[in-house]
Image 1 (tube, rainbow, N blue to C red):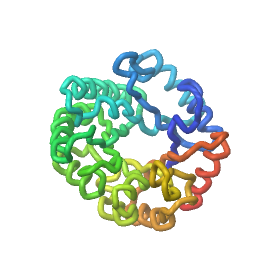
Image 2 (image 1 turned 180 degrees about the vertical axis):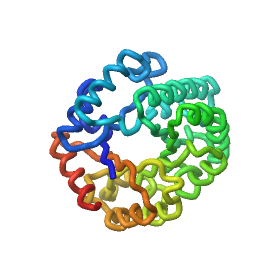
Image 3 (image 1 turned 135 degrees about the horizontal axis):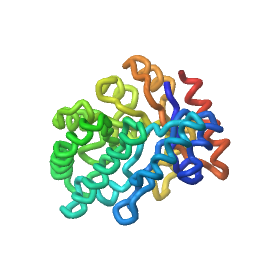
Image 4 (image 1 turned 60 degrees about the horizontal axis):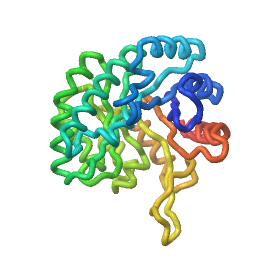
Length: 271
């Protein structure tokens, strides 16, 4: 198994993220292409900065495990405006090319409905993926769809159906154990239902109910401090034969370093 951490959890710069992750014991960093990439670009879209990143990765022995297209929350494939959808296509194409250039084989795309009805959102996502899958296949970069507990595209069955309809070995699921639980899928049964043929990447985080009257019903918490069955999740991961990336996405607390070390130790103890 390989262990990664989201770049935002490190609370450091693009230039120092991999070195910091290595000091904490991680194998990889999940970078992000955010919403500002449409207007301001991204370090990953710049050839010189990509070359510098490759040198830093080689020096510290920590790779880029995945790149999250966070810009899809603004320029999502299900957006009502065609111009926003077109911008999303451009961002994903550039991200695919960037990943191929730095040797990263995975992209996280948050599977959200952009406020559209489930059937509309699903149809637009399918059209989007059908158009972009050729780019992913040409560069051998896997587009992993992360369900985010949105109606019609949050459960294991829903993401499986979308992957099947796309019909590409370079489109799979990004299985977030907490998000799946939020959508009503038991992560243990969801992992077994999808299997390693569909699971391209896994996010590890926990959740617990908030007190009555809180603004949000649940909060994300450190691993083992919530309600998810991590021994069962680990057993399911082993059962399906998944041996890829487990990426940490938990709160950082006042100091991100001890929080990251603690959650990494929790993950490693499971395997």
